[in-house]
Length: 66
Image (tube, rainbow, N blue to C red; front, top):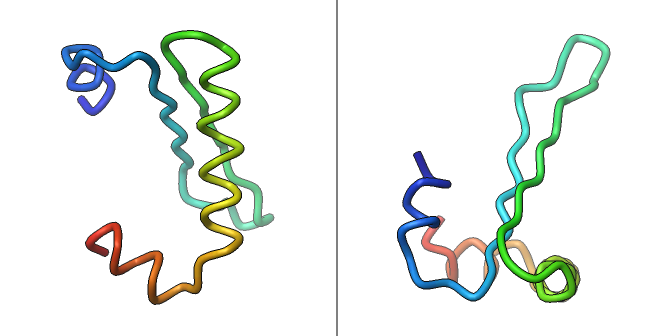
């Protein structure tokens, strides 16, 4: 559903990362989908990683409305 909404938008690029619940062994399935230029998708992922690493938990959640 989210991917369909993203496909309807006029985005130059998007990255969608999802994961399932962890198994009893602690493993979880992670899926990554992107649409658009591969270099731009890489930039988005690296920028998101940097943002998460430099933000405190409270600020990160508040800015995203969590």
